[in-house]
Image (cartoon, rainbow, N blue to C red):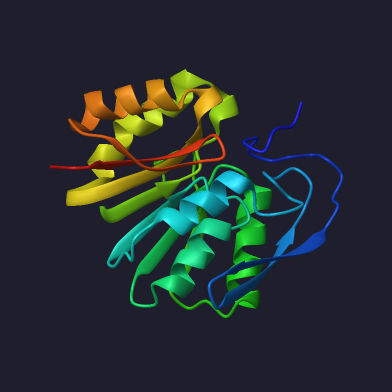
Length: 196
């Protein structure tokens, strides 16, 4: 059975074009079957993007899908350097197309199972994590994330309240020693922890 977190989805292709706007930034994304939220930028991602402060430096989009988070952040923060990763090769290929078609120069994408193909550290990690993979997978990503952040760096996550936002907050607090919800909207919590 294919999931959006399958490494190589075999579902039949259904290429589509969608649009997304944030402030005066208007983006077009090519999507396909076998990737997360292919028909529109999902509500949680939208709440996350609208909750983030301006971010500079190196930003990691963890589990980028076809690229809505990383590409939007690249346009919002033109002096930042965005790295986008996903386990799903189809998503990675789409993200490359979407970087190109939105004229983004400060983002790159690579296929990676979690952090395995990454080098260096980041000033921020942003993610709408693949909750359906289960707590074991998600929490191991949380645990690893701190090693990929600069001191003073931040992780921002969106998690639905009914899909375990409170327990995720407790886990992040355990790892980072701090976690707060910077926004709660429509059943989604935007969680923020800082590496101190």
